[in-house]
Length: 319
Image 1 (cartoon, one colour):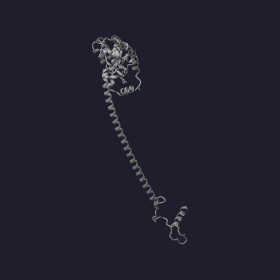
Image 2 (tube, one colour):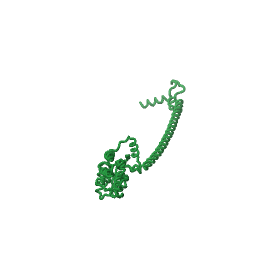
Image 3 (cartoon, helix red, strand yellow):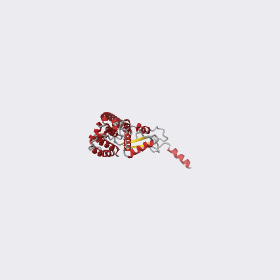
Image 4 (cartoon, helix red, strand yellow):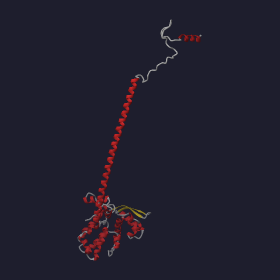
């Protein structure tokens, strides 16, 4: 069975980091609801012919030749399904000179250039095989920024020059295996995403399951915390709204009382002074002209005193 995640880096990353894209990709892939990555689908299609040919590779020599062809062919980047075929799996327990081809195929499936270099008695690689193994190794090394420096990559991939490393990265990018940029100033490779083309080591499946279980527990814990915080926020909002309503009711009550008292004061003033709210002035009896209480002889009642004096003065002024 071929198992690969849909993580932007590779299957190895999902066992270590178990990011959200990884888990959702695995679940959707398992349920048949997520489309396979085009590069991954292309690699599986390229491997299919070798899986079919494996049924006729009954001798160890034929099986070993098939491994060499599969690892040299273009577009073949996944090998787990071929490893599980009967005749190829038989190489593992076959003669030593052919058993090494099974180990080589395992390295192409989930190993790196360093694994090939450190494993003795492996078949020599052709130029096409060496180039492909370095490409696959670059995918695995892209799991950590610390492994993407020029210095580290030159050593890990056994490359002799910076130019050779940059050519390898560029060819890997054009093959659609990764999205990256060469930072020549900082002497590093900035990787944005990696196609899911590395097979998952069988020994890492329990670790992957454990990592996913831990992630699931963390998600449940985070959701519980979020729900608690949401309840607290809603409770505080409700209490604040209640306080605002109480304040609004108190203000309306005070305004109503003030208006009512003002209305009563106005009614009281109107009752005291219907005209203008002021009492009429009372004279002090010192006016220059007083009305006669009693009319004298030859003068009508109510005539003003001193009227004759005013008339005489007027006549003198006119004369």
